[in-house]
Amino acid sequence: MPDSPELEVRVVHASPGRLRLKVSPEAFQGEALSRAEQAFTGLQGLHSVQKSPLTGNLLILFDPKVLGPADLLAASASSGVRLKVLPPPERFSSNNGGTAIGQAITGLVHGVDEWTSHHTGGVADLRTVVPVTLGAVALRELLAGRLAPVPWYALLWYAFETFTKLQKPAEGAESSKTRHVSQD
Image (cartoon, rainbow, N blue to C red):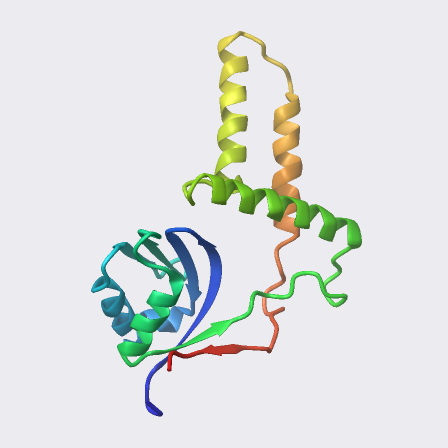
């Protein structure tokens, strides 16, 4: 369909039964997102589609035994909406100052995050597990009456949070390469 509306999406996170897409703020006002969402809601095995104009995210929860990302793409295409899947931002090019050690740490953390997400069925990732674990340790120390000026786990959390914030790509530092996804 040459005059089909196009919806640009970026896959933020994908795990069995869970797909988070980033869309532009304008997409929430257009017909393409509404049509794609209607097509998704008619699929067997879909649990929910949650839109957040504030964050620009579209969260799709589904039964991975019944439905997969390819089925979602096919449903979108059948609704007449062409999805344009953008690549992830290039985080560590020489233009934005990523260092070799930063890349190595990020690769390790990303691997552990993927492993955690996979082994929890998409229920948890490091952004959930790390603060919950540190909060539990802090509560245990508080209940045991062991108060210290700055406990080790608070310092660990500060290090983790600072690292992740500093590794985010700069605004507008995205690749110009795009990939079109279509269903024939």
